[in-house]
Image 1 (cartoon, rainbow, N blue to C red):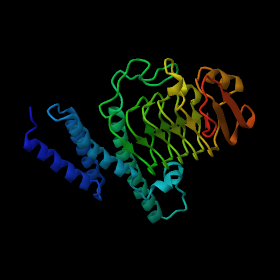
Image 2: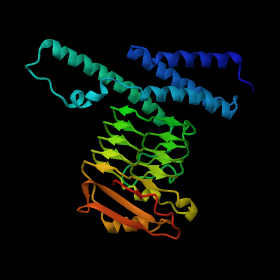
Image 3: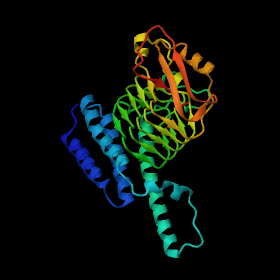
Image 4: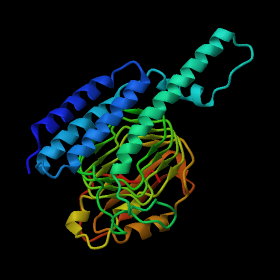
Length: 321
């Protein structure tokens, strides 16, 4: 079965119009455009009459447009604290109060729109049998889950400012996922996720609560030069463990947090816990953490990663707990 030319032309027309409408001044028009792009991507991926390579290429174009919109600057994002936690003073003039109210409405509308786009993406990076990562929960791989319908696509959120909650819990990232240089003002939940390719989080600023609990990284996870001001949940060391992997594969499964700092509360961890977590890792190196927060009562802690093979000492792997 061959895709009718009229159907393909219709999808391309809707895609082109929606991509352009994302620049519209009206938030309602941008919301409608985002919904169209999401629908077009779903249509391409579900169309069995089209070769898989073409389906992915066309859907990727829609994803790129959505990611570009998420990366685009929003003038009120830098006023996150004032607009979310600020108070209105009685001494302010009526005009100033009206300006603040207008800014607050615009801020909330944009946050709702962009947050909705992320929720749509996250839902398609999961499968129905992916359980929510709670205490004692499992990752998608551990309970037999599979990639979501959008897991074979790439995502570039580099430099994005997330002034709204980010929830990618249980997401299966089958291809490239880039979050380098992002700013997370609100909470960021990546718990129970799986990164099949390199996870790029270098240079991120985390100002809200952050969770990578029970995450799995199949390759290098780069968290270097990050700055953490909020509460951190989930020790990164256990992410490296997965029985059945060979020493050669484990060797490249590193987490890098060089030059990262923590300004918020840090969950307690002891050297004993670190050694227990790393005892099964078939590699060698050093687990290091340093920052203004304290770990086991100290500002600096290191623990050797004991194993059968050595990956060298050039790359420091570690955890900001």
